Length: 145
Image (tube, rainbow, N blue to C red):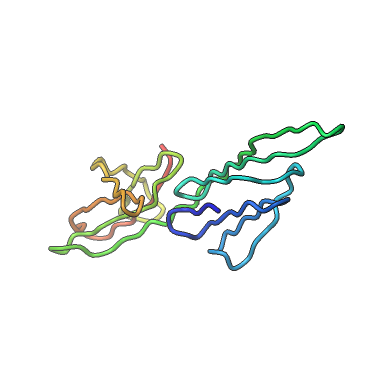
């Protein structure tokens, strides 16, 4: 089995199938993959990259194997909490692609990158960034550079 850092995406290597859940194990979907015995599975922290190995027996009893990989576009939730002194604490799971935290004064306005560097918390595989509260309205998002 493999899990994303937050446990929302799971993968299980079964004898003849590879199963994936995108809702913390509530529902499972068998992947359409080569037949064989799935032996190992690994997943990125954000759940968007998956790799699995399999072995099989071909014609004449000849063994073969392979590595299957998959990559989806990560959907990273941006978490915001209040910190000490009224500061805002932003956090998001370690992504497989680069994301920047951006800010805008209006929701459909121009977005500016926040230049402060987030810190990686290795205990939960999340980037964290603490900022002072904004003056006026502020909207935040994660975007690819």
